[in-house]
Image 1 (cartoon, rainbow, N blue to C red):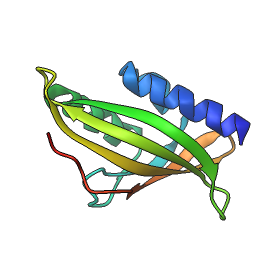
Image 2: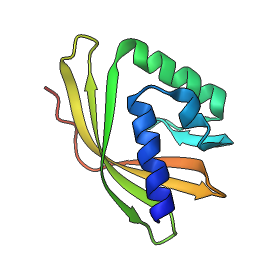
Image 3: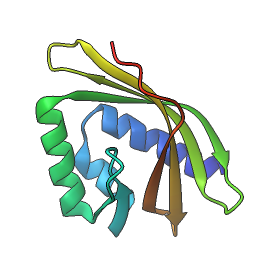
Image 4: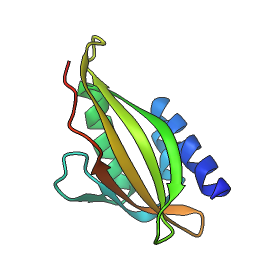
Length: 122
């Protein structure tokens, strides 16, 4: 798990730095990425690139990984605190999530999201 944990720490750092190219380099070209709205998946690099650019135009989303573990089916689970702020810096929500990654041959092929508790809206 050490290799996967290091990779995912870099992924979250790249997200914090808004480095889309570095994030996509860690993913399979046909990656499936759960929408944080719970309505399906985004598929592929182009869809993720567009999604993140749109999101960052309207919101400042921060993901703070808290812990890492391996699931029964050998996926990597990360407990994450997601904080969403408006562009003026006011906190809109803070939620604890479970990010469940499927990694094959050193690339992320799928992300599933499980909400750990109800959002705390400021």
